[in-house]
Image (cartoon, rainbow, N blue to C red; front, side, top):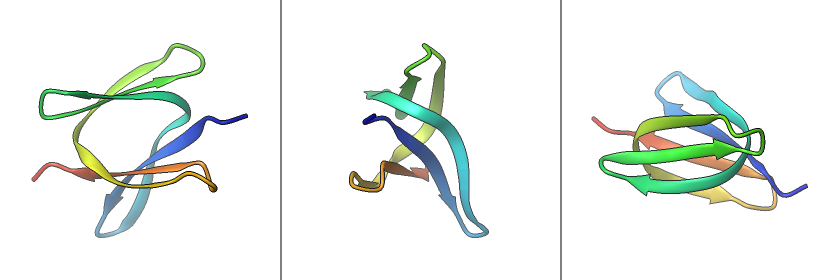
Length: 63
């Protein structure tokens, strides 16, 4: 499986936003996450980094 988990990076650590993310799309002032199950979430922020081998997406919240 190639899907990833998306985390919001904060001062207190990383918070899981969504598991099994299949698609990440830029949208306005944030990113839309779509899981393999069709669940969708919008996060105000931007991609901080991708750890593809570990299947992780790290998002930086918009300030």
